[in-house]
Image (cartoon, rainbow, N blue to C red; front, side, top):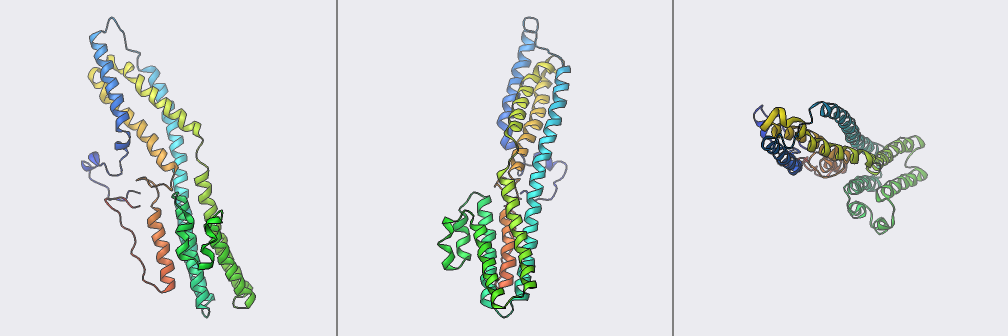
Length: 304
């Protein structure tokens, strides 16, 4: 995610870090080249090849395309913002559970530390799955030796870490170390973590219908390719500039929507999952009495 102070009026015109321009530049250049060709043809063979289609049809199509772009980008941003709220909930639940484990298991230090490490294993496994990495490998360093070998066979290593954590606390309940009420408080936190996992999997596994992306992509290309025919007669050599601005807006919103639609990715405008994971690590290590790692800082305004 791009994290930077808002640049001044002049600097913002030339800011590229976090801009969508490098990604869409080839398309904008192609549209501008077509516009130049159309204007040259209109001015060189105006009577033989009448190219002016008038601006009226393009106004109506542009309005409809803008509304559709707005709908899709709002839907993509909702996915991005929901994913951020879900990870905020994860941090809240981890902090709450770490406090409960310290308060309810003060005399069972071994079990408390084991449960806290499983909590870190759960978060690392979830992070790895969302980023397309090996969740079993990510969780293994935090789990007891007996549980590591079973991770590759688990459908969800993150869920396996939570299951083993609950089983360990259930054993404490049967031994009398935890009361029914105390176990119920902890179970609420475990249910919250499970809900976070389910929400992340739902967001990742349910993208927007592909038909939306396909329809928008085709319409934007056709509109930008045909627009010079409506502007060439009235704007002349100003047509490439106007067409490039329209192409930058439409293609830029389309590309930005693609990034926001997959909030757990590693693009510049995706969520900073590495930084959020570092926060969770800090909570767990603080509860373990170990040195807390410093929060991740943006690298050239990019917080990963």
